[in-house]
Length: 282
Image (cartoon, rainbow, N blue to C red; front, side, top):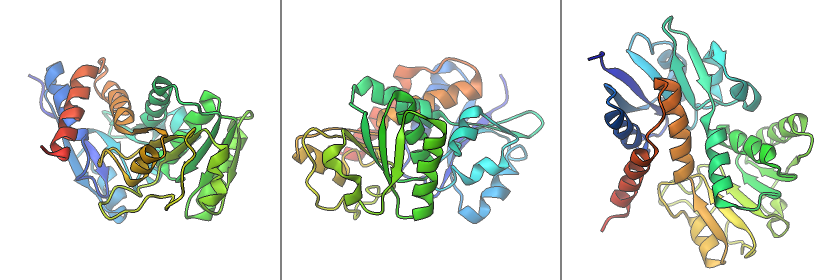
């Protein structure tokens, strides 16, 4: 048997993640001697951690908040998607110890939004961090003509809008300075790519605003399965979805980068659904 391979997720926090259950089930189903772990890495320790991967026997990583953008600086081989988006969520450790980076969030979100058949022509996006960058690029590639972006940091929202306008000529992206500026009455889809809604005490990122019934609402957060924003969407008669299937699809992409084998989709899906049931309780 080949020696144990180590994979895992780095972020801060990561204890809420379902990724370990999904990937460990996939490794077992594929007969791969590997283990997936969760590592909470503060921002100030990111460089030290990434530079020690080979020494720790770690063969690959997923990357989540708040490291998706910062980790790009440590890649020797950023994929075209990483270079374009400016964020990485999957890392492979090469035999010589250098790091290759990929963005499977991009394809994961794109695949799920296509399966949902949501209308994406006029989109509103909350957040401008690493996950939001992948979402914005996926929306533009899928044909979104208008993309309004709000983030609490003005420089981040403006930078993301400028990048989308530069790369995708058919998409007009613009930054707004408030949630109200998103003008949800004129949009067909709202995506929350911020962490607001992850903690039990979090409010909805749009406050008490009433959502127009024609709007589709997508929250990248999957734990909890129904965030305050999604409860709002349900109450207003909107179509809605959380990010569980995006997690699945990006996880499948990561698995295939790491082990060069097709990902066992059903096994991974069942593992995620099992984790969700545990969180929901009896």
